[in-house]
Amino acid sequence: MDKLDLTKADKVYYTAKTKPQILYIGETHYLSITGKGDPSEQVFSDKIQVLYATAYVIKFMCKALNHDFVVPKLEGLWSFDEEKYKLISMEEAPLKIPRSEWNYRLMIRMPDFVTREQVEEATAIVINKKGIKAASTIEFYEMTEGKVIQILHVGPFANEPETLKKIQEFTSENNLQKNGIHHEIYLSDFRKTSPDKLKTILREPVK
Image (tube, rainbow, N blue to C red):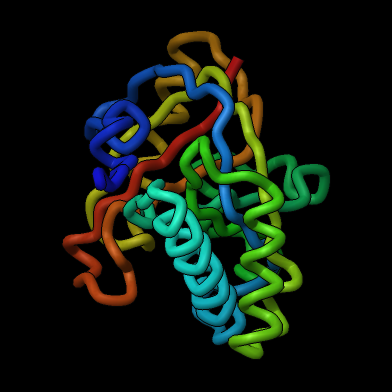
């Protein structure tokens, strides 16, 4: 039985260069959980754990149906109150907006054959058999980003403003406008990888 690995099957989605580039991202499905606050807090780690616990239940459900897959990379959508912080630029946001003010949606991409009903069944298993009540907030999330600018950021998250500046300059040079929520794809497991070796795709929807 072949095992689907989305990082190999959809290399466009999971590959970026260290210079800004434009591409189009069509409809994509995710397992998702939302929150607000500092990612260094325990609640953030707990949400990642429940997300992966549910993802692996779905994986084994699909494997039993001869649709096995590798659980993909963690991703995140990050946003804040743009009216309250409307004078702050893209590159300044990580430095000037308190971490407590950031909203996030943590995501794990799901193969197209995974259904909403399977996600609901998996969350019920995680709640009832594993005793993880927080799984009740897991959802099947669909998103079509469309046209985006993306770039590969190498190094600590604290240095992201330097890379975001490149996106901002590229946006201005090409007369583009922000058209969605900041998206990050964590190619490295930041719980196990040295900060200087982290690789993260930064993606900004534009029009």
